[in-house]
Image 1: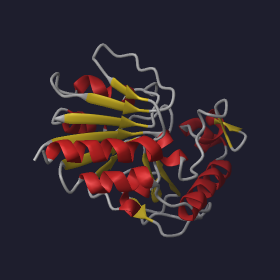
Image 2: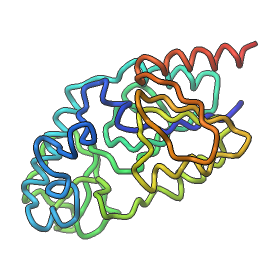
Image 3: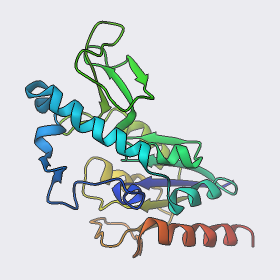
Length: 230
């Protein structure tokens, strides 16, 4: 069974109604990124940061996976599929994808501010000041903020190096280090990029498919499955 690695970004979830910041002049809910998504922001105003991610978490519970998410589930019936995502929502999992690596953390999880290995899954969308981990430290979003290391990046590289086919969906390939993943795809493995306007800066050949994830991913998956069965 051939291996397909799928790398997804914000455009994958945008069609489900998840708001992104790069389409609105660097603002999330009228907040500059520096106010809500950096370690400095957490030190300066933890309540604002918690409130911001509470709103993101609440929104995540109100939306549903789109046709692109479900197309990737169908792909698993015919290929060995692993998804590496920059997204922090759980829409891939809710659609039914079985192997998903979150590079930038997960909204559905929180962790201790003292011990990063104390991680909890939360069904509640609201985390407040005074909500503590078992070590007595304040809980924070299990999110990789700007300026923090991406702990799963080495694992993502290893996954990418096993690809027979690489599909990139809904990312402009400008956020590093994640954008550099395509450079680790084996030389003879085709790379396909689905995005309405991305212009990747890469030395390798990339097949660009102009369109949205919900529109073009089901078409690509159908084509790949058909080719595999002929």
